[in-house]
Image (cartoon, rainbow, N blue to C red; front, side, top):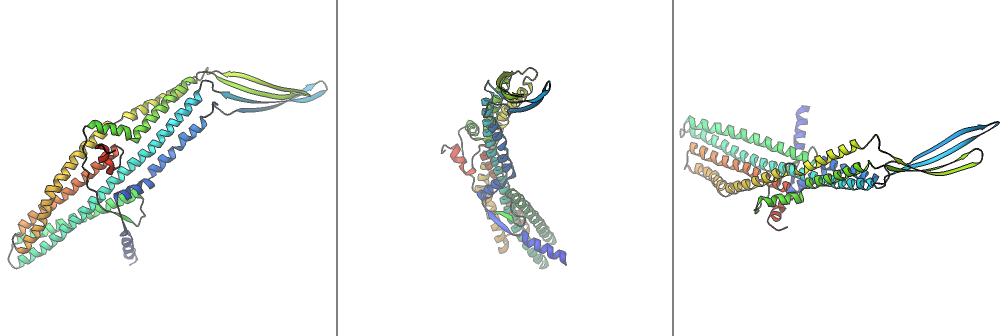
Length: 412
């Protein structure tokens, strides 16, 4: 008996729910996202590089000390010598490296914003899936309950001779199919809730519920060039790519300047036994004779090419596709909401009334109500597609969904 008791306790615990709005779910996901945390941590690397690039010294100074025993006839002593040597860049490479590191810091910071953008898009799509899954579960459960009542009614009709076995069997089959669909829909809702719970880092014994989806905004734009201009101006991944390309260009120039000999300055001092004191200054050049910066220049050029490719990769296609999907999905959702959904909702009510008043037989009720429920379920699919298209377009333009209309229709 212990195992069923444990299962019962776990079932009760799993029923703890929290109702979240889209904004609350998005904010929670962004605040707790490992991807965002990793992007924030990645900023420290270029910051450290920038801190090391603020001086014209490619390396640390070298401090040397030596002691040599000297023998002269019957006397002996020690010669002691110390030196401090520092290499100095005279061609300005350090300034270019500092500028490149600053550009990389800007790129890393922009990638933090891009991580937030992508996490927000993922959780918004998951939220839409949950909202629609909950609607589908409620609708199919209601349809199953009606189908079961209809099957009971058909049985009474058959027993009194008012209907035949064919109609009774059809009602029984419909009730079984409807209940199966309701169970599958409920499982889908639970899976969608679990996925959203993972994204927003809810405790294991808590599951989210959606407060509902907002109505899609009325958004139009003059031409696709408006979308592309907005994306180029706002997308953090494009800002990151531009900054990376700038930093790579500065690194290429700094690597080429590495072919200029660096200055070395040494201060030397010491004592020759028994009394001579030494103090001097040496100046030299470190000549790039064997290591001529080939590896550094090649790596910098490779980074430059990669940054340039990132800047133009697939953004145009992504933005235009998102805009086209939004327009088509919104039009389909409007048509369903104003025409199909209204008629389907009315038919659901009318079939129940017609059956209760004896104005329709079992076959007519099964056919008409089945078509009405199918239309309502199709509307939920259209609603999810349109909501996801809305979120995709907002993410493609790097704007909050509720600010999309203001951005594209001149109310910036």
